Amino acid sequence: MHAIDSPGEIPVDSTQGRGILATTVLASGMVFLDGTIANVAARQIGVDFSSSFATLQWVLNGYTLALASLLLLGGSLGDHFGRRRVYLIGIAWFAIASLGCAFAPSAGLLITARVLQGVGGALLTPGSLALIQSTFRPADRGRAVGIWSGMAGVATAAGPLLGGYLVQHVSWRLAFGINVPFAVAAILLGLRHLPESRNAAAGRRPDFAGTCLIALSLGALTYGTTVAGDRGWAALSLGVTAAGVVLLALFVLVESRLRHPLLPLRLFADRTFAGANLMTLTTYAAMSAVLFLFVLNLQVSAHYGALAAGLATLPITVLLLLVSPRAGALAARLGPRLPMAVGPLIAAAGVTLTTRIDERHHGYLLDVLPGMAVFGLGVACLVAPLTSTVMNAAPPDDVGVASGVNNAVSRLAGLLAIAVLPPLAGLTGDRYRIPADMTHGYRIAAAVCVGILILGSVVVTLTVPNSRQALEDVSDVARH
Image (cartoon, rainbow, N blue to C red; front, side, top):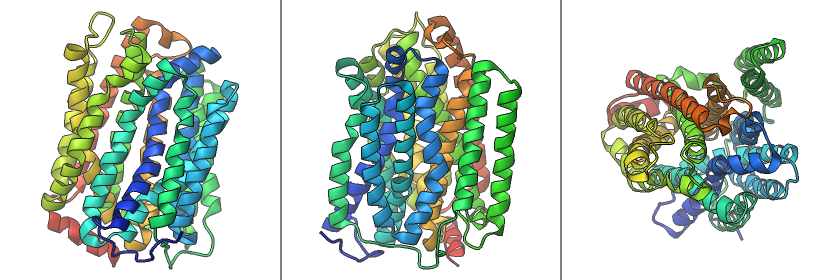
C-alpha cells in the first residue's frame, strides 16, 4: 500500500487526515502508555525479583534514558531519511522490545529490554509531531496537535489504570506484551495513509558524535544520582555525576561548531522556544515524579491494590480527553500564555491535596479524588498549548528536530526527577516498603514538585507571548 504524497495540504477531516491522526495517536500513545504503565507494575516487579528501590528506578529510567538520549537522533534521522520510514521502523522496533520485556526472566534482562524499548520509542516519538506538522494544512495544525496531545495525554494517564488491571488480575508481563497489537494497527494505518516528508536542507549524515556525547552524559548523570541515592555521595557517585556534567558541556561545545548539528542551538535563540522548553522541563519533572510516587504511595501506605491504585488516576484521563483539545483551540484564538501559566498552578494545588493520603486518610472520594481531579485539570490546560507553542516557534524544516528537542526535554525531566527526588525524600533501599517512610517520602517529594510547577508558571509568564498575533509573529521570524 502506498501513501498519498500531498504533505502540507491535508485537511484533518479528510479520510487521509483521520488516518494520519489515528496512526500517530496509536503509536505515540503506545510509548506514553508504556512510560507510565510501569509505574503501577513496579511494586509487583520488585516482589517477583526481590528488588531494591534502585532496581525499580532502573526499570523506569533504563527506558527513559534511552528515549531521552536518542530522541534528537530520531528526529534528525527522520529529517534526513524520511519521517514516515523512520517512524514505521521505530514502531516495529518498539513492539519487538516489548515482547522482550514480557518474557524477561530476570530484573537485569528486563532492564535491558526496557532500554531497547526506549530506542524504538526514540525513533517513532519525534516523528509523530513532525508528521502532523508537515502533512496537515496550516489552518488545521493547531486542531490536529490538540487532538494528538489530548489522546497522548490520555494514554499517559491510562497507563496506571490499564497496568493496574493487568498486574492485579493477569500479570505485569502482559502490561508490556499488550503493545504488540497497537503497534500492528499503527503500522498498517501508517502504510496506508502517511505521506513521506523530509528536510531537503539536512546534511548528508546525522550527527553521531553529538548522539554519543549526549547519551553518555545522560547515562552518567542518571547512574551517578541513582547510586548517590542508594549509597550516598561517595567517590563513585560524585565522579560519575561530574563526568556527566563535563560530557554535557562538551556536547554543547561540539554542537556549536557543527554545520548540521544534532541540536541546532540557534533554536534556543528564540525566547519563546527556549521558554516553552524550560517550562516543559519543570512541568514534566513534576508530573513524572508525582505519577510514579503517588501510585506507589497508594499501594504501600494506603494499602490499595494495583487496580484500585490505577483507577485512582482516572480523573486525569477523563480531564485530558475533555479539556485538552479545548485548551488547544483556546490558545489558538487568544494566545498560549494564559493556559500555560495557569495550568501549572492548578496542578500544584492538586499535588498539595494529595499529601493528605496516609494510613488513616485514604478514602477515595474525600482524600484521593480531589487531588487527582485538580491535578488533572491543570495538566489538561497546559499540554496542548505547550506543544503547539514549541512547534510554532520552529522553522518548518526543523519541525522534526524541534519535536525531538521537546520530547527529549520532557523525558530528561522525568529521568532526572525519578533519579533524584526519591532519594532526596529518603526513599532508598527497602524503605519504600514501610508505610510510614513511604508517606513521609512522598510528602517531601510532593512539596518539591509544587515548587517546580510554580517555577514553570513564572517561566512561561516571562517568555511566551500573550497574544495570538505575537505568536504568529514569532513563527514568521522563525521561518525566515
